[in-house]
Image (cartoon, rainbow, N blue to C red; front, top):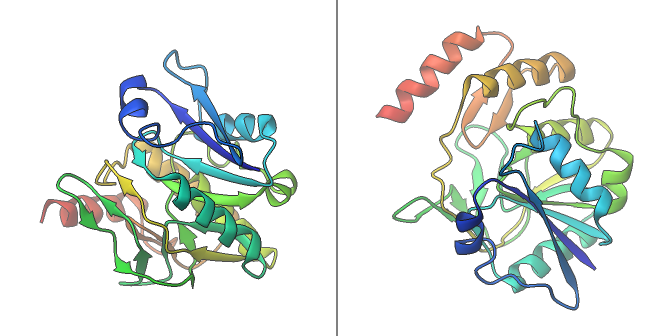
Length: 231
């Protein structure tokens, strides 16, 4: 069984994208967490709650504005269960500078996300829009609600935590579409990134939005990212 878990705050977006082709099936369940009334204060808290409800061997976490077909969900679950030492597998992942790997498209009009892949690639982190963990991995290593107390970087943090414990992180060739262009970085993004760097003490954290490092002030890194996005 596969469990597809999504916390949403817009029912129409959920209907138009994630639920466009996904329905309850024989081999997967949908766990939809309604946050239209701000029940949850963080993604980590919401998704831990959803994972506690899940019955699947594979937990797939998706944004409300992701369009993905059932066969792609099954393919992602297959990678999660079959890849050696897999901790997290994602539809998009980053291994280093200019090494964003994916088979996804995003934005309007749709554009490719990074380098297109035909086979799994080991990466440092995955993007939060669509990723999976084996349920037994989540049960031992749930999302860190203290470090990720807002709505950003909860999958990035788990990738770093699981790599330290010997797991591998993969970008896998799964077709999907993410409506958002992926540029949302509120002040809480940088607060959370600072907490992640303090916790994990890695020299560089690579994400789909670029890199962060403890060796430069976060304010400077924020201004640099905002400048580059305007180009």
